Image 1 (tube, rainbow, N blue to C red):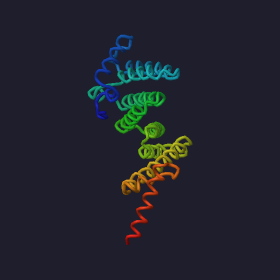
Image 2: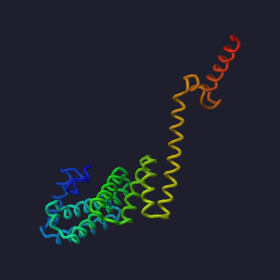
Image 3: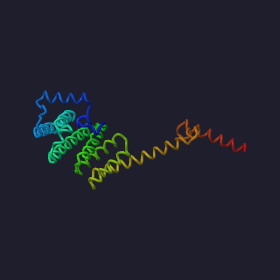
Image 4: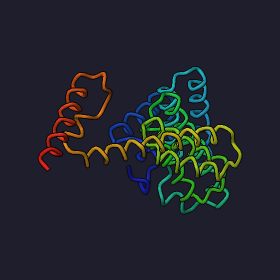
Length: 235
């Protein structure tokens, strides 16, 4: 994933996927204008359509509309160079909203890998665009943390959720997920300790691990006791 790609759309999809999105836009009355204001208006329309699909639970179609909106907002470096500050801010703010929508759509679809990816893109966009929206940044970190927790990466999840908390102090949902991440983190560390301890055991000691009710364990323990008794007698 290339965060420094000139095209925001290419941060989300391959060149082949990008061409399909462009073709869909052109075939469905959403050709890209050369006029700044018209492109923003078209992006707003597609984002609104995406929100309708999102609210109906059709997250895949919602994402396609959001991607279409991004295509209209994808001005190249040369075009952006000539923008006034207020227009650049307007453009970056619209991009931020669509990225957040895409991230939410992946989250709702329980696509954890792409949820994290979209959250990373969102944070990077805010940094590059010098956008100071604590609520938006907190959401991205929360979603990234939530996605990592679902993937089993408790340590990464905890780090992201701590960042989310710094932007939204006292948020109950974030604190709840932080607690859950901390518990998983503790369990992971205990499991790692057990794995390390088992590496230090001899094969005989490993065979003795478990309950007496297991025939194999009981047999191993009896044999171990007999061997220890024999060693004491020979000393």
